[in-house]
Each structure stands twice: as C-alpha cells, then as structure tokens.
Image (tube, rainbow, N blue to C red; front, side, top):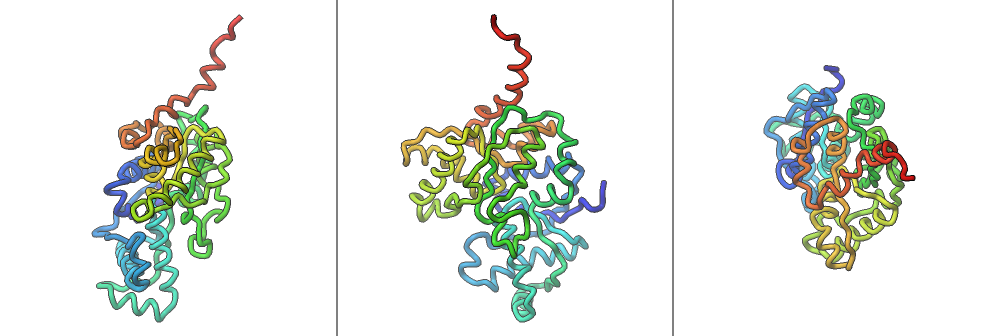
Length: 303
C-alpha cells in the first residue's frame, strides 16, 4: 500500500447515524482503492452548524481538539466525507494561524493544537492524490447508460481562500469521477446552489422551495439521478422529496446517491456494503438504466 494514501479519518456525527450509508460506502470504496483510513481515537463533534454562530473560539476548539488528536497519531492529513465537518475543521485551522486566536483556543484544550495537520475532503484526495485515471483503472462495472447530475452544495468549495479545492463556482471533481465511471454527466447549472441545509426544521418552506428548484432543474435537463457529497444535501433532496412534491405539486422520483455509492457499484462492490437500501427514493429507477445502451446495441433491429 502506498504510504502517501494513508490518512486520519474523521467520519463526523452524521456518518455514524443519519448518513451511515455515506460512511459505509466511503470506507468500502477507499478499501477497494487501497486507501488506508485510520480512525481518529476518541474523536468528538466538530460543532457542526450551530457552534460557530454562538462562539468562534469554542467552535474552533471543538475542531482543534480533533486535529490535535491527529497530530498525536503522527499523521499529516485528516480527511472527512462531510462538507460541514470539513468547513469547521479547515476554518479552525485557518483561524488558528493567528497567534492570539490560537492561544485562546489552546487554553480550552487538554493538548494544544500546533497547526501541523492538513484537512481535506474524501472527494479531494480521490481526485488529487489518487487521480481520476487511477479510479478509472479500477472500474469493473461501468455505469454506461446512467445520466447523472453532480450537485456539490454551497460549502464544499467555498469560501475558496479556506477550502482551497476545485472551482468555487463551477467545480468538476464529481463530474470527472462520474465520467471516469462511465456515467453520462448532464451539465447542472445549479451545482453550487443551496438546498436549504439545516433550515428544514425552522424554515421548512424555505427548504421546499430551494430543494424543489434543484429537483425541477435536474428533471428538466434529463438527469436520472443526482449525485452529491453532502449529508444535508442528500437528506433534503432524498428524504424530503415526497414533502417537496406535496408542497409544490411536483411528482419527482429522482434517486439521490452519495458519489461514493455509485463509485462502489462501478468498482464491483455490493449494494449491501454501500448502503444502497438506505436511500428513500427507489434507487433502481436509475440503476436499471445502467447497461441500457449496450443492451439496445446488441438487440437486432426489427424488420
């Protein structure tokens, strides 16, 4: 196993609960690609969405504690599948470059964080460290015939001075991976628009409108599935799809996959180990399209 593909792994709280299929498929795909994930011992919540709205010092301390644990593991890079966790971990490291802020945060920690850890998303290390061609070489069941729209959400690549990955307005990482898997990627003009995120509780109407717009557009451009890298985005588009249909009068029936789930299928992994059965919208309305083009080519034309 290549020493460069060896990372500290931060699953995040949703990865052990509401988005467990994302964690399952991430671990399965990384194993298939010879990427070593080292679980951070005694990791804790990064603060997620609420903490930074209350206290920046406390929010940074929650993330810095985990980064300090990574330093103790002797690893240089921590990766996480969740964009919300990624934002908090990277923002904490970014803010702690200021000496006075770092001192305030470290006073709250049992072990100070020395700023020696680089934080990246699983998506980032797949395209930058392994490479799209490296992924393509491992494909055993191409996704030919499946039309997908890649949806990144609004925080995976922004703000660019902190996230430092891909294009903040027109990212292509997931698009390129899906193409390498053999899928047809339809241009999605709303790929970095907000789905409403965690406002599904205080402002359900807002999420219905924003997520509904995303589903409308995906349907209009002919997508048979949406692929995403964010638990909140996946939840709003998949779990709430029925609610959106009721609120807007639409009749959407578009499966919403984590990009790692489709990667896993193309790598020959089973639906069970990828958590495909945990999706709300029937995934087989899209998966049944795989191989459709080849089947039509093999059938003799009617005379």
